[in-house]
Amino acid sequence: MEGIAKQLKRGISRQFSTGSMRRTFSRQFSRQTSLDPRRNNMRFSFGRQSSLDPIRRSPIHDEQFNVPENLDTTMHLLFLACRGDVKGVEDLLNEGIDVNSIDLDGRTALHIAACEGHLEVVKLLLSRKANIDARDRWGSTACADAKYYGNVEIYNVLKARGAKAPKTRKTPMAVANPQDVPEYELNPLELQVRKSDGISKGSYQVAKWNGTKVTVKILDMDSYSDPESINAFKHELTLLEKVRHPNVVQFVGAVTQKIPMMIVSEYHPKGHLASYLQKKGRLSPSKFWRCSLDIARGMNYLHECKPDPIIHCDLKPKNVLLDNGGQLKISGFGLIKLSRISPDKVKLAPGTPIDPSDIYMAPEIYQDEVCDRSVDTYSFGVILYEMIEGVLPFHPKSPEEAVKLMCLEKKRPSFKSKSRNCPPDLKELIDECWHPEPVARPTFSEIIVRLDRIVGQCSKQGWWKDTFKLRWK
Image (cartoon, rainbow, N blue to C red; front, top):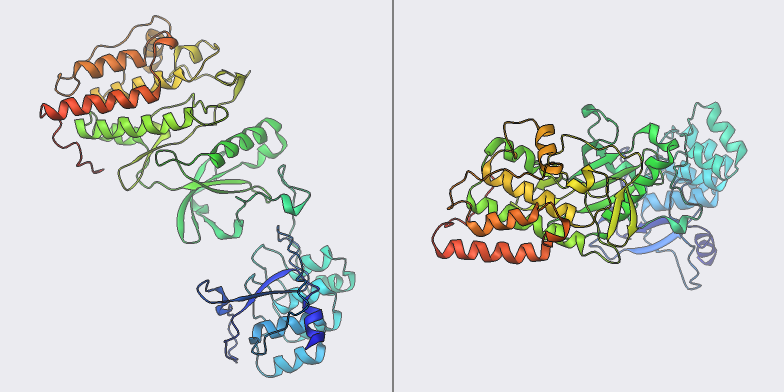
C-alpha cells in the first residue's frame, strides 16, 4: 500500500473517487459518480495531467495519504496505466472493464499511459480497441499528450495508427505561466455555439454553457493579427469583469487561452429596447417610469465606478437589453475606442468613425471634442423623448438631418404628448438632459432622485395608477 501511495504522489491530474461504485462489466462509456458535488469525495492525484489543461496542479505531499481500498474500477484502470503495470491493466480488461472508461476530466487509460511514457501499456490498450482519438475535457488526445511530454516512441506508434494531434495556436492573450490564467477563463468545450447561425465579425451568438443560455461574442479570425482589435477586446473584457449591477449586463466569463477568443455574458431572449419601442411606439406611463429608472440606475453605477468612471459614449436603445423579469440592463459599454485625457475626461481615439445618423450622439462627440460623463446624460434625454413620443426627435426628418439640427444648430423638438403622460417637471428634466452645454446637464444620481419625485407626484394625482404592474408584453 505504501508503494501505491508513493506512485500517487507523482502526479497532478484531478481525479475523484466516491469509494462506493460497484464494478461494472458494461461496454459503454461512463463517468464516475464522483461528479456529484453533494457526495463527500476524497480528492487525490496521480500522473501527468493533460497537455492542454490550463491549470497546473501540484502533487499531494501528505505522507499519510493512502489509496482507498474500495477504489472504483475506472480509477483503478487509470492508476495501473499510470504505473505502467501491463499485467494489472490486462487483468482488469479481461474482467470486462471498458478500455475507454473516462474519469472526471474525460481522460482514458490511453491518455494516462501516453503522458507517462508506458509504451507497452499503450500497445496493449490499442490492441483492445482503445479510442485512439478520444479527447479529454480540454480537447487533448493521447497523441498530443505524448508529443507534449516528449514520449517520441508512443507518439510515433499513435501516428502510425492514424491518430491526429490537435493543432494548437497561442492567442494574443496566452499566458506563459499557467498560474496566471485568469479566474474568469472558461473551457470552450463547455460552450455550445449555434454554428448554424453563422459567425460574423465581432458578432454575438446564442450559445449554451453548462445547460444555460448565454450570449457569446466571438473575435473574428482577422483580428488576431491586429493589435488595435486585441486591445479593444482586452478593454471590453476588463470593463465587463469589474461591473456587477442589476441594471448592467452580467459578465459570465471569457475564453482567452484558446482560439477563437470569446466573451460570454448573460442571454436576454427579449432582445433590446430599440425593437420593443419599434413594436410598441409610445410607452405607457408605468413602463416609461420603470425603463427610465432602470437605465438611470445602470448608468449611475457605471459613472460611479472607481477609480475611473465608465463613460458609455454609445448609450442608445439597441444597447439596452430586456430580461424576462421586466428589468433593463445596460450593455455595449467599452466598445467605443476612447483616449482618456483625465479620470473624468475622454476623447474619441484617432480614426474612430462617427455615425452621422446616430440621433443619440452628444454634440461633443459629433464635433470630436473632449467630453465627460454628460455625453451619456444627453443620450438619455433623447431616449426619454423617444419613449414618451413614440418617435425619434424631428420625425419624419431623416436621422442625419435631425442630428445636424440638434448638434450643430442646438435645436430641440417640441413635445406633443399630453401633460398627463409628460408632466412639466419631466419636460424640464429632459430639456436639462439634452442641454447644449455639458455643465448644465444633471448627473444620473440627480436624475434618479428627480424621476422618483415626479412619479410620486403623478401617482398622488392618480395619473400613473399602473406604476407597479409592469410586464413586458
